[in-house]
Length: 281
Image (tube, rainbow, N blue to C red; front, side):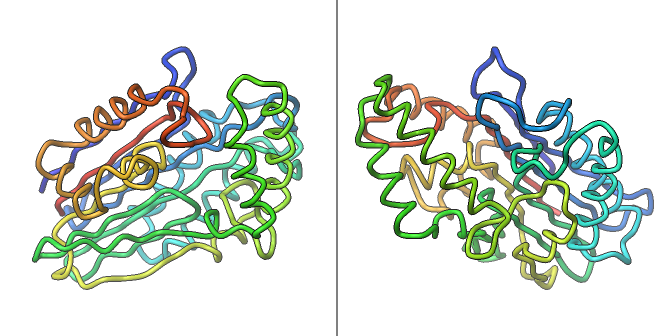
């Protein structure tokens, strides 16, 4: 078995909001991986005393423990219970109904001798490498499929000069438009304080014989494909398999440095937290 992980903050002056982990049960049978990408809230109140890293550490830790110790639970059940546990930890001190309460995207996979289960919620990615080297990406594309009006608002925002007052005002308006679609019908979903969101995740199961490797990516690492167009998902998985997760993060950092203002490759953050988990079960 081969297991490799790499994480890196987008800004060394700020805590990394991504979470990445792998666990192997004491029985020696199978294993689990969990990767979360914390959602950075806009400046201002978000109803919680706790930071996004506090939230992702507890949600991720709960998911990992449940996924290996309760193998009778499905991954959506694991996510739902982990959300409930995490909410209980700060329900008495924080407003968990606030639309900016700490939240995260989720990738989870669990394997046994018979099968590989997967779950993806929001815009992180899981790549399943087949025995022949082809790759099946597991993606939740709802964030990319927002209403035409919101997509038009995003394009108009990206056309404005960085640092300008016009871009700042348009950015605030765009954030409000996106937030109105978060965890709402017709929008997209993230793990926050409502366990019912687990039923919205993209899930599936593949025969163990059909999976050679698993690669989990936060969107800060997946931008190598989705933003910078450096290669396909298959080429991305091959890079990680060949050179390791840190090589992918290094390639992303090089692409970000070559386009610091986002002129050639528009994106919300010039540099983003990045996390990669690679497992050959």
